[in-house]
Amino acid sequence: MFETFRSMWRIRDLRKKVLYTLMMLLIYRLASVVPAPGINMAELANQTSSSLPLLDMMNMMTGNAFNQMTIMAMGITPYINSSIIMQLLTVAIPYLENLQKQGEEGKKKINSITRYVTIVLAAVQAIGLVSSMRLINPGAFNLVLVGVSMAGGTALAMWLGERVTQNGVGNGISLLIFSGIVSNLFNGITSGVRGALSADSTVTWMNPVMIIIVLIIMIVVVTFVDKGERRFNVHYAKRVVGNRMMGGQSTQFPLKVNSSGVLPLIFAYSFIAFPGTIMQLASPNGNITNWWSQNMAGAAPIHLAVTFLLIIGFTFFYSSIGVDYREVAKNITKNGGTITGVRGGKQTADALIRSNRRLTLFTAFFLGVLSTIPTLLTAQFKIAMPFAASSLLIGVSVALETSRQIEYELLRHHHKGITR
Image (tube, rainbow, N blue to C red; front, side, top):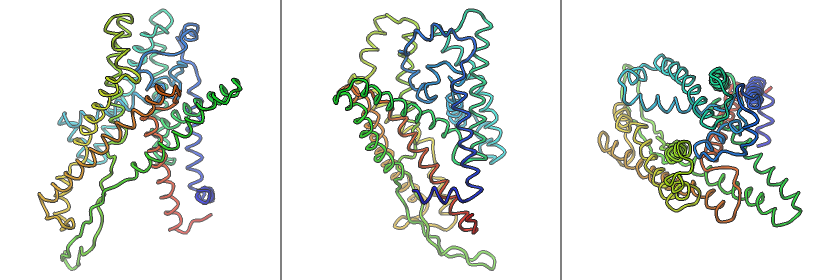
């Protein structure tokens, strides 16, 4: 690892990309402490924390910027929501489906539409959420200030993420989320250490020590699953094209174990948190709200069971709208390829689909179990876990993807002979 860092620093182009990425992340974190105008700061100081379950995820994604009501309170969340909405609409709307099939030009148009949807969604989301928490100063002008400033913060975050993707290392949007997750994790561990030092008792040290141990174990397990693949050996037969002999080689077609990523967790958490948030905003002391708070939150058995089933359902749903393996099998057969031990055509498609379903089933149960670990530890051992399963999965995935891109850059420069 240290040799990789030394090699990375010796390559001028890669060094510039890394420094550029760090600078953009620094700007993002600095903007995350700028307070949004129009906020009633006295009321914000009185609200120690939000009891709205839907906002816990936003606070996790923004690195506590939402609790502090800064211009980055919405963070990059509206962009993620817009991207998911556009991805789902691409399947349902023929115009967007045609744009997706137009290659690079169609992708640019879809990205442009996504940006506009992001800004509108950020403004509406900011005004709706902040006003429902009664944190906006009276007056229509303050409503506009909050909407414009927080939508502007989202636009800045989106711009920073795109600049990192183009000129830096890694996926910029993912790295912005990663920085927020790391910030929350660092604050959780340091606050636990400070509490243990002030209490001057060995018992209080169990909290930060257990957090670190559980964190390391879960990172190892998530990394192992994230890098897992089911590889098919594909052999291409020799054929004459013009005056040239083509084919006659073997390659591998990989199926990722966790092809759906973190989306099933995000979908499931949002789906189960949304009704509770609406109930608490509409009727905070109602009977239905109290029942929901007791049975559909924390380590309540019904909550854990429903969340587990939702994760399984969303994992299969996202897998079904992902790669079209019939089209993959058609392309393999068209190019004269066959999977070892499988006939071409329909048999190839069936083999890929069958393996993908088995991997999806494993992924669904893995994500379901992973989602319950922080909740059960908090309930059974009274450990204040500063991370959720979704944040851990996002953090590990982003770190692995960024490291893979750095390794690729190192190999590319070494191949060219650039070592200074």
